[in-house]
Image (cartoon, rainbow, N blue to C red; front, side, top):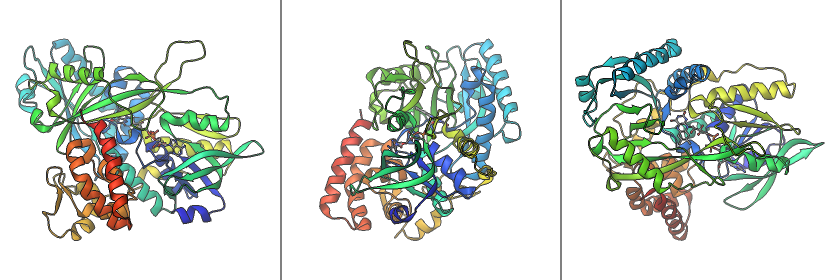
Length: 510
Ligand SMILES: Cc1cc2nc3c(=O)[nH]c(=O)nc-3n(C[C@H](O)[C@H](O)[C@H](O)COP(=O)(O)OP(=O)(O)OC[C@H]3O[C@@H](n4cnc5c(N)ncnc54)[C@H](O)[C@@H]3O)c2cc1C
């Protein structure tokens, strides 16, 4: 990839940021025939895109807020993504327990509207369920004053695995995507942005690339790039963090997800079964400068423990927490002189600078493809390029497979799983039996998925760090040795990798 990157004289579109947004743009652009380069300063999906609630959803919350246009767009994208990446997007049932008859009517009608908005791309009809049915579906639900509930369908996915499959798709279509490649400054020609200076974060080398269009898709980091373009640019976003606690399934045995539309302080709370654990979240806390490894605050952990314990009989305690992960959402920065910050609508927004730097903010994982389509349309229009038609809405993503055995430990590789399985010495060659990760996955991740560090493998090629931080630390030394063999590195490299991984993993443990 790096050789190709150095050899290319002029790219059509250079995309800065290898999260959901940047990859969605690259997917749409490359499948229209553009010469595309995506550069990511760290690993693909290292930022917010590996730290979501893992939902591909229309957004029941946005419906409650009256944002029907966003729910319609997201529901449509949910359906398309399930068609294009069925190996990663699961049809998940959600249950809302209700404790008053009024809520039962309100949520029952609301969810019918939710089904109706999704139309032909609905994942299944919502139904009202009785008190007995809900107790059967969610054995751990608090039953005092329980009046029944509503059952509905949404999508559930693995965020960083989708990012890796998108990178593979982009490359298969002739595009280029490189991790550990940071944009350190922008190039300008007659005051128009025409490329960037890149720094290879592994070798320290830097070099320039030229592009007809440059896109800033760096999530909470957009202001850093905007200031490279214009040092006087005012801040456009501030970061608000959301944490998730991951628990052992012993505290939550149901296959259905739990959804609380309105907690005591007006937030939404989810408990979603994910791989062999359950993810509970999230929070919304304004933080200062964005960081690549944000940390959970005590009050956020307490909020989730206390709130979940109001709805679940097995009260959740710190002892059962297997991992804590934190993501940052961009909020619209307050205007000069104002103290308020208001959340950017989850619908996305495209900004143009005077020097034709394109910046995209907002959106959700669910709408990544549509964001890509809109951005590429906008580039064509703004730069007066000949108009092309987006084909990404029906483009199958790498790993595509219709029949999925969700119990297979290798299910998330989709059509790649046979090749991986063929290279396993036997079906018991576990790196972690608890997390059902094989040794053979390490070499695959290095050779086919651009894993460069132990963290890449344990956090985003597999989800060990997010599922069980302690267990991932136990695995790290062996992963380092296996990776060193695949990458041709020495023991010193392996030792340094373990140290670096453990420093990060400590933040995922209590
Ligand atoms: C707590 C939480 C829960 C969420 N849950 C859901 C959900 O369940 N479903 C859903 O649909 N959406 C969800 N979202 C929203 C979704 O996760 C985000 O919309 C999406 O991940 C944002 O992707 P992004 O690419 O814009 O940002 P990011 O993923 O942060 O990517 C930006 C990338 O730019 C890179 N970068 C920065 N500077 C440079 C540079 N100079 N050079 C090169 N690269 C650079 C960063 O390293 C980073 O990887 C959630 C968000 C949060 C915060």
